[in-house]
Amino acid sequence: MSHTRADFDQYMVPNYAPAAFVPVRGAGSRVWDQADRQYVDLTGGIAVNALGHCHPALVAALNEQGSKLWHLSNAFTNEPALDLAQKLVKATFADRVFFCNSGAEANEAALKLARRAAIERFGDKKHKVLSALNSFHGRTFFTVCVGGQPKYSDGFGPKPAGIEYFEYNNLDSLSALIDDETACVIIEPIQGEGGVVPATAAFIAGVRALCDKHHAFLIFDEVQSGAGRTGSLYAYQEYGVSPDILTSAKGIGGGFPLGCMLTTSDIAKHLAVGTHGTTYGGNPLACAIGNALLDVVNTATVLDGVKAKRELFVAAIAKINAQYSVFDEVRGMGLLIGAELKPAFAGKAKDLLNLAVKEGLMILMAGPNVIRFAPSLVIADEDIREGMQRFERAVAAFVTA
Ligand SMILES: *Cc1c(COP(=O)(O)O)cnc(C)c1O
Image (cartoon, rainbow, N blue to C red):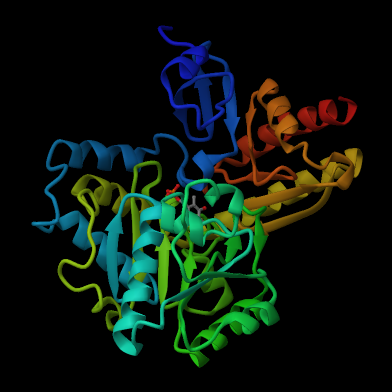
């Protein structure tokens, strides 16, 4: 054991506050730390490890591609990227795919594309970006400013102009802002970081209609809700409303950095040669893993399993809540689950997270009042049972703390 948690404070930039233990290996939905203590992982690397840790199909793809070809640059195309792009086109509304390495990069591409296409079609004035309050779209400066949480974007100097905010799930609020100068509206079908808040079906349909009326592009940020998380490959399929541009990252790489932006050929043509790019985007190693992930996830077995496993979680949380009365509401879709603490426990999600660690359980928060579960989509039922037993012990300690 050559390093300790204390080394983090000595060597790393202090922008994170990691847990006290240091994980060293994982398998499925279990993780072990330096002392070989075992944890049930219900975080899924924040909705990233869609197939848990070291899934055999992903390890095989990594090893196979890893000894074949890693990286070329975008001066050359490659088979894994073409394969993955074709699969994504077949599985969604989209005709064209742009690959990148993260959610923020996917959203950056989406926003740049939307503005570019709108300006080329209607002139310079059509550049307004409308985004929901409390939304999260990444941490590059453009995406963090588009995100509706000033605490993340303030303090970095002048912000890009032309961004305005409406209330999520409030169509009147969007209706009051949108006009013929609006280039695009960007929303998360389920606000993840903002507290696991799903959009209502009426809101999604209303947003689509308003965008159509004003020739504004509709961008769905599915970085957290995508790649099978809801029990459909993408959440828009649950709503039956297609966007013009969709962004995906997190789960699509299963733990390897991979992001993508999907769109129609009519819109895609505005990203002509030289208008946008990224060095690593669409590299064969990442795309080989993305292919393996999609082959496993985009099947009835896994997607139906997500819905069945959600029921196990919801029932277990309800049982715990019947005894301890800590949660107001349990929400989300599929295996993106948020449990909002009652007002008496407001602001204390982090305390519950810390107590969970003591019980050998990794869980997430989504803001100070919401406990979030985003486990592997193929988590074993036994791991859910064991995880929820540990969660119950953490909740018992929490209410008496
Ligand atoms: C995590 C997240 C992002 C940012 O993704 P990164 O890979 O961290 O850049 C963007 N949008 C949503 C909805 C997210 O959950």
